[in-house]
Image (cartoon, rainbow, N blue to C red; front, top):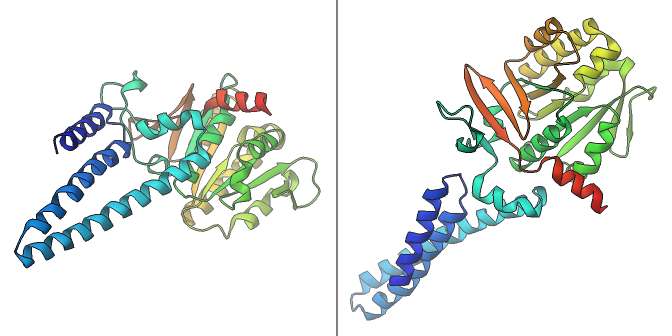
Amino acid sequence: MAFGLAAIYFWVKVYFETKKGSIAWLLLALTSIFLITTAIFPSIAISSQDTDITEAILLFMGFWGAVYTSIFASAGILMFRAFETIPREKLGDFLIEGMVFTSPAGSENDSNNIPEVDQISTLLNRSTLIEYTPKTRYEDSVIEICLQLYGEMINTVLVSTQPRTAIYKEKIGDLMDIGAMKFIEISSTSKQVSNEDGVIKLPKDELDKFFELTHKLPKGCAVIFEPISQLLLTEGEKKTYEFMSEMVERFASGELLLVGMINKTAHDEKTVSRFEGLFLNLAEEEGTKIRLMKGGHEEYIRFYVGENFYMEKNALV
């Protein structure tokens, strides 16, 4: 009894010390409670001469066992999904700290003190433009967002161009194989829409067909469109703006989550500002996190995978 109570105190104390969203610590406290009750209540039931008390205890034990088992089954599912999407060396961070954070008032300059937000889709619940620079590896941002959306069981369409399509397919192609996401490549070499190894090739001269490919996407699906800057350089501002404007309008009416990417240093300020006006949210990549600005508040998406993991993975292949 004493050791069980000590275990409960320890794990609850750990949870309140970390306060970073993991249910792992509370599950351990729950285990301690369950073990104590399964030891004490059967003893009471056996020693009691009152059949009503005995029946009540047995009913309680059955109910408690069902609750405990279902919670642990749910935790097992979460763990299984984490093992599928998170590098094993990062699982500890994932379980303890969660993955999505928001900054408290007065601490915008400290990312280490930002508390959690439940889901990435809570932050990116409106069309969002993420700005990056040549100094950042925005491919990691794209991969990170895809992994987190997969963790939330949100189907995702990733639109890109070569050579990045090959990078994405190498890193997160497993998500395509299990049907969790689709790849669309805007190609400068393809002459017609085709499907090559699971990647849909869309000729850049036939951008209008993009809407034929996406018009049946279910509500709540996420579309990450990263080649805005590439289209600006190859197709010009007028055509790219008209295309993106139609995309924003169609996806909003279809209740799809749109995340765009643009290199803010590759274009003049007026051009960037014009495309910012198409999106309801504006975000900026900063090192190992994305800073999201909404209604005057700053919120953050912190990365746990990061470029080091992908560089190490390449080195091991």
